[in-house]
Image (cartoon, rainbow, N blue to C red; front, side):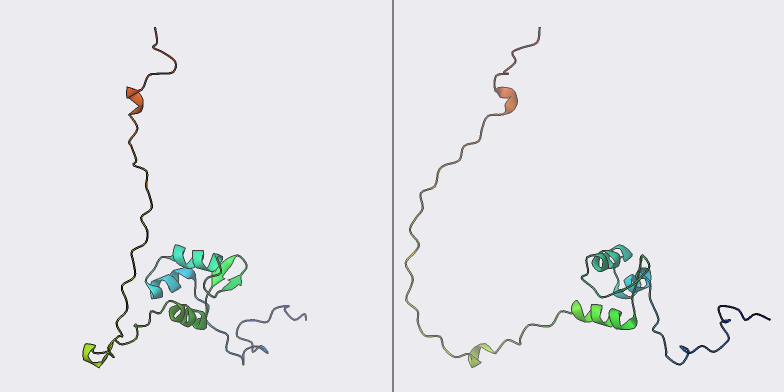
Length: 123
């Protein structure tokens, strides 16, 4: 009796001990990020976000998703000091204004229909 070339799914395989990561499709990633699937695919195509390519399809792991979120995270600016806590700035001399550059006065040209036709009038 011949053994099947591919073991059935219920049969243990040597890789069953290693947990394979869950792969998300762009639509699922877009739903989590609150953007469009087109944006996710476009960024992956331009290699601006991490992804896995399975055939011609873009797939994303949980680690990829976390990295995408970290990449687009906005940090607050450094906390501003209280105005009284600032050290007084030394007085700076007033710089002289830059020399005036002569500018040409612009004129609007006349409308095309007001100009004479180069072909004359039709008979």
